[in-house]
Image (cartoon, rainbow, N blue to C red):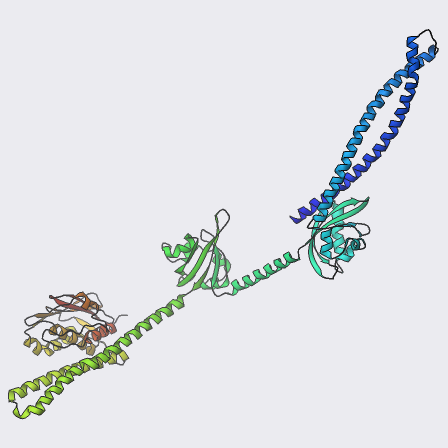
Length: 598
């Protein structure tokens, strides 16, 4: 654009010079017209001098003013003079018209010169005209004076060599020479020297011109120092950005709308496990990058204009990683998509760490709940039995001499009951504590299931007889399980004890077992007891749940038995659950392996 403006101003100077030349020719022609006018005037005078004699001759032909020859000659002369008179009159009229045109041309010339002066002096470009032969300046406008720091008079004493740094003159003159020979404008960038010695960058456009019949070249100067500094700053900024993108640990990419890589930084290439950018550019994103092409979450980056989120992608070796991404579309002025661009970060390790932290937090929460439960048991469940035991022993100490043998026997039975409860509670506490600390031994082995259940049924025979509860079982005789015998005995004892505790007199308990696969056995304990509502079921296996209900005959409960059962079954890789309806009884299910899983 600047070169075009410079050329236009050069063309204006050309036109000005041509107009000045034409005006000089017009003035010369005006002088010639005046000489011709004088000659024609003389002819008119001669004609008028003979006009009287000619008229008199036609009035009085008898009078001989001229002889015959003179008359013929005079007549011819008169005719010629008449013709010349008409010609002169017509030419004089033309001269007058021409003078009027000259006057208007002069006025137009003065107006044009004023416009040119305003144009040159008001131009934002610095304009200099220099003689090609001497390199001296013949014209300078105010803008060039301000740009270089010289006055117009000072420019008249300078040459081109004064305006360029040392050693630059030859290249500048070479540019001007090639332009002059080619008869067409030239434009180039050049370092220029100011009056105060500072150097600035300028864009120079030049064109040949004739001034005062001398071959000159006019130059249009524009200070581009600030623009060049901005360009250098932009170049430096781009270098910093490129260096940042190349070194950033996050993946930076550019893709086409149809799912082809256009560019990617080293981190992106490494993240996806490819050897080079060229190899990555050749893949199809939708087929090779996303492991689940039909998953909308995986395709969001390619389907909307801007998106942030998390998705899993597939590496070159087929392994999957989780990435956090921020992507957007770049569009042209018409809203057409040019390409997709974005940043990705591999968060696989972060998610794994977050999951570990979550597990640790859950473990800490459970540990706190276990601690609170432990303190609750010590403060409440141990305190009450000891109070009963202390009360019985106090009665025996104070009233023993007066007690009958039956009364003494009843007290002894009560002491045994309390001591048994305390022992069971302490046994549960010890087992639970050892399990939580991970110091309890775990030695699973294969054994016949019925052989492990029969002793437990006999253990509760007295209590079931007291409550008249029938115990039945449906277990294949050859069915085997692979379990730790001590843990199995403990969990079966807790489940059967609960069934007896919450089943009223005259009820029944059924123990069943069946294989559910080649590797697992399902065992169930069903009772016709009081059952449970949904709230109790939901908190049944939670350490902080309030499930310490008393049995049908006031039997106490610590709430630890089912927690221990759950931990033991989990240790074997199985699971436990319950089905119950209030007032209709409960059925507890759990699974155990039949052999070692490979």
